[in-house]
Length: 131
Image (cartoon, rainbow, N blue to C red; front, side, top):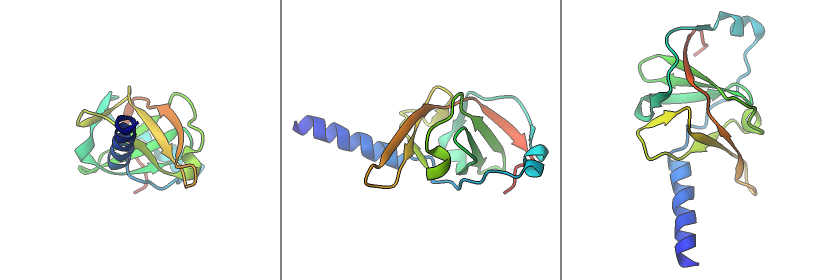
């Protein structure tokens, strides 16, 4: 039992410490969304240390704002229940990058702190995203 508790605690700490920052859910107005255009080659992974912040747009869309000013849009293959409402997620990875094969977990408000777990999509560089 003691080993299981330590593993569970370690996983919880890793999940929260590696959390994709608690972003802000901001669905865009249609005219704002129309300004967003693909701006480069789709990437499988982005470096963790370069992520400045995130903005959850809805249950399927997360914009990753990078330190260098680039913005990557990740459109999940399937809707992730509660993501747009809770506006925050966590992830655990042993690599220094976040990849399309990784799973995010919605971080909910207590008393039930962990929500749905969902797979990421690929990272599309975009232009025209609001700051």
